[in-house]
Length: 525
View 1 (cartoon, helix red, strand yellow):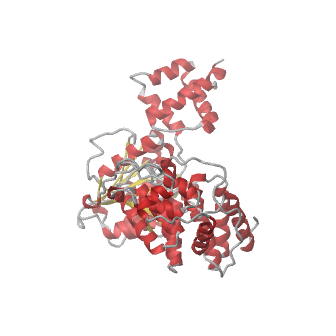
View 2 (cartoon, rainbow, N blue to C red):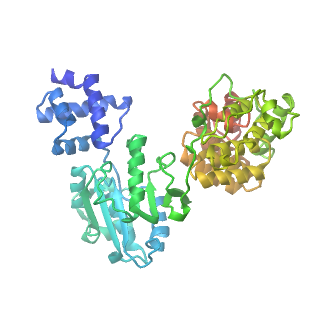
View 3 (cartoon, rainbow, N blue to C red):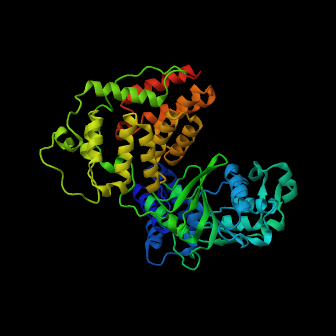
């Protein structure tokens, strides 16, 4: 009877809510089976009924021991030494070489948050020991995790061969000794790291002191938190990082939508962040979001042009194709004969808009854009009050319209303004890629596309653009990889985002283009 109750939807939903409230861990409906198994194991281990067990954790004084055991069941613990090596190379070449930001002779303080069984923290210790200029006495490494069982394993420093699968053989020989089938880390490195049980969602002011750390690794942790919890965790980390300090996240994690306290860095084939100095802080008047923030209504049809021919590899660039498409659309619509001051009349507005507001209503301009009346839409945006120049949404829309109109120099300058306000705007980086291609800077275009794709992995257009750039450059394997990903993403792409960034082409037209280009690059559509 206990098993059937434990696996009931109500019991699983209560455990889901507990995991979020007590541990900050988010589990969607797809994890219901996993949660049910965890709940059943804890009921079997404690010998309690499901209601008694859950009520004990839901109350004002839950058992800390049981929460620790529950955390062990719910958290992913699999990791290995030198994971995501590109980030570790950036750590060695950029952070260790530069020393403590603004304090070249001060000790370097490093935090490994969500350290699991210690492989990450110890990898950092080995890099410090091997660095030609870093001093072991000038580096302090702290590591924290909510899972006490993993922390005990970390302190033992004993690992299987599987945990060393990415560790170079010379490092294995220098840093480990074999004991039976396991490998034991040398005491030199174990003594460099201090481990502690801590919960990232708890704001412990005695630990999260201002300017306490120079570097924070918090990889593959934020992905388990809902956005509001993740924002709080990032704010806590930002407060504890010294200005100029570095933050490393997992490959699938970004600060987009979570924080404006950091610069995005892209070196060594990876992305990471650097905390802004006080003089670089920007006061944001808008939400700094992208298409969905404008409440654009999806309507049948994603754009005006129903089809597009494949692009010959040595023929038109993608940005030139967009420009010509816009010209074609303009020839099919009634051009505005009103001067800029009469843009509202051209759009059919009988009364002037309301006085300037802090949040601008861009709905009419979006509707004009949906009708391919790009000049009228741009005129409307240009007539907004001067205060709109500090609104990233307004500037992004202006950059889109300038790109459609082929004024790439002005569009690039506008993108730079957007990125001044919101450095993590995936849309602005994609538009910047189009501008760079238009200027003949293919490498710069690819770099901007990579940033856009990193910031928003669901964004199809930078993947498509990278695929087209690669095919034109003869990099067929890269073209196939990016075009396949673009083909997948386009099928679920928001209609509102296609309206903004697809250059007037419909979803079906872009899918056809992807398939044609994929076939031309030697791949299966």
